[in-house]
Structures are given as structure tokens and as C-alpha cells.
Length: 499
Image: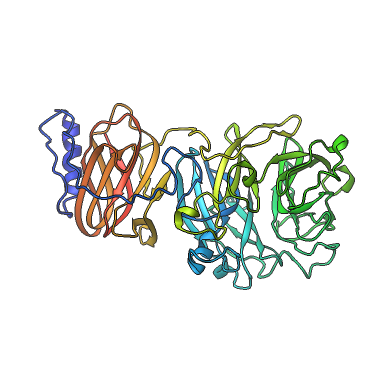
């Protein structure tokens, strides 16, 4: 047997010796470990989404109104925390948004497995707010050498606030102590609901912010932000956004400003200028306009609609809000749809974040129409199981409860049946001999191929009062979806394979 491998095994066994009940290693054999016997855990049967489906991107947290930003090779995604409303009113309640004072944080580097980073508790950071909805984030590197993140958000329908951080996951702070713009701001020109912000920074480093909604007529507005990105440095300018409703967003692509918004619920087929504007948008759909001079009202050119209401695409009807993001060499459209509320026994209007690929011609600034689907997008890189993987990184799950501890975010089972998580496309190469989990508690974690009830690859049993890393042998895997089935009484922090 290879001496280095024997040494590693000995070290790993010593590291896990504080836990009882772990599978012992037979270090005298080079052969692959025999198939372990299942502890016969009963995984939660309800599957909020099928493991083969990409949408919603997080299946056990209601979330909506997406925004995102790339940082250090990862894409960080944020949204309105519908889960907070659901937790308050229950499955028989309605999503009327008034209890939502937090934002959800997620990240990914492969567009298949998403890490849940918890909530931004905006109501605690900025206790003057009424609510926090529909964020829009921008960032820039500043004189202190740090990247600063600016998160604009709807303070209910009253206005737009902003919080800042020097990390995409916080901690966040309130730099103004009040709204950036609200109903008291002069120059709104009839914009009754200055909310749903959409921000961008152009190639000269200038920040821009769009907002607005409610009422009849063009309700969208745009401002140039000050150098601090926390002040207004222009007049509040109207946008020629016909049949505007809400869901403002602003992108800067190839020297051009791309403004998107959601149309209202009325049909405008009779009044639509087909010769000038093409096919009229379906009700409550997403449309876009472009310009190179954003404060010039007449310079904006209406282009087309690019995303119909999910109700027009075989899902439930609801409000519509999208975010266009380039990540790597592809464009993605994030949106929300009410895909999972029935799985949680509710019909109250609770939303989930989704993503599908978008085709964008950067030369002509044409956004092809995007189709919503449960399939989602393809994984763009394999997951590396030989680096530590947080337990809250997953493609699907059921029965999972999150908690914050001295170890950060951890997972546990929220009921008597075993919870489970699944990661997609883990690349073990020629195979892994060992797998370890960082855990606390008394119970077990089973590792299964492809599904929670799939072939058993490893079983880890333990009894630990403090955090410990427990290893066991695992049958060889190449590239697989793998699932972790977690018994009651266990806190699960992270996992890692060893060669």
C-alpha cells in the first residue's frame, strides 16, 4: 500500500477519534471499500422540485425580485424575502408583502449549485424603513482598495433606500439614515411610487438609478447618482415608458443604456402602434428600451418585449420582475414564478427565484425572447468535491432547516423524517476513497448517488457534543449528482472528499 495514503488515513482517523460510531478504515487493503450498508433513514418524500430541474434555484426559501452581481468568480444573487411573509402569516395567509423587511442572499459559480447565505435583516440595519423589496446592486473598487457594494431597495411603495458593504455577504450598514428618494423628494413630476430601483455604473464610472411605478402613463424615472453613489446629481427625468407598471432595471451594455420594466395588466392591442413598435406586449410582461444619452427623454428607443408573464408560459399568473446578468460568456435572465407554493400547501402568492439563459446581441442590443421553464440552465463547470463544500450549497433539498452558529450557516432536519440535500455534477475524477462531514450531534448522514433513495455510497454515524470532522470510506464515483440524507438531531456544516 502507498505509505502516504496510509499516513493520510491514520491522520484522518485520529482527527475523528473524538466521535464515536464512525466507520473504521481497513488501511491494509488497496481495494475499493465494500458497499456500505444503509442505516435505512427515511428521507422526506415531498420534493419541492425534481432533482433534474434547475428551477427554482432555491426550492425551500420563497424569494422574488432578483438582482445579482459578479465578484471574485462567483455570482451573488439577492431578492425579496417572501419567506419572511410566509413565516409570519402561514400557509393560509396572503403575500401582501407588509412583513418583509429582509433580503435573501445566494451565490453560485456553476449555475447549478447555489449557496444560501441567509438574510440581510434590513429592518435591523435601517430601522426607519417600512419594508424592503426588489433590490438592485452595483459595486466598484474604491480608494481604500476595497470593493464597495451598494444595494438599493424599495422601502415599500414610499421610496428607495440604500445599504452598503465591503463584502457581497455583508455586514451591511445604513449610510444615509433615510431614503435616497421618496414621496417627499422634489421633482418627481407625478411619480407617486418611487420604488423598484434599477441601478448601473457606466464605463466612465458614473452611477445611474431608475425607479417608479403606479398610476397611469409613463411612471419610470431616471437620475444620475453623485460620485458617492448615495446622492442625486441630476434632475429627476421622465422615461417614455408606455404602459409602465413597475420592476425597473438598468443595464449598461456595449456603450448603451438598456432600461427594462414591467407593463401593466391591461391589454393595449387596440392602442398599440404596430408599425412603429412591432408586436404589442402581452399583459404584465417585460419590455426594454435603449439610449446612449439617458437624461434625454426623446433619445430613448422602445425595442420590444422579451419575457411574458409566467402565467402566459404555463405557470401561475403573478407580478413580473426580471434581472439580466452576464456571467462568463453567457447572459442569464433571473425572474420569479410561483412554482413551489403548492408543495408547501399555500396559494397565497409566494414566489421563487428562477433563471433561464438569454440571448443578447451586444452589437444591436437585441434581447431575444426568453422562455421560462423548470429545466433552467446547464451547469457551466463541475463542482469540486476535494475542496470543502458548505452543507448549504445545493441544487435541491427537502425538510432542511437553516441555523446560524459559531460555524456559520448549518443544516439540520426540521422534522422526524430525514432531511436531504443534493448537489449536481460533482467531479470525483477517477474516484474518491474517503468522504468526510463536519458535524455535531448524534445520528448519521448517508451519501447516495443521484437521489435521496439512490444507491448508497457511504454511511457516516457519529455521536459528537462538539464540532468534529468524521470520515469514512466511499465507493468510487466519477461525475455524479450526490445526495446527503441527514437524520434528526444532527447539525451539518460542510463536507469534503479525499483521495
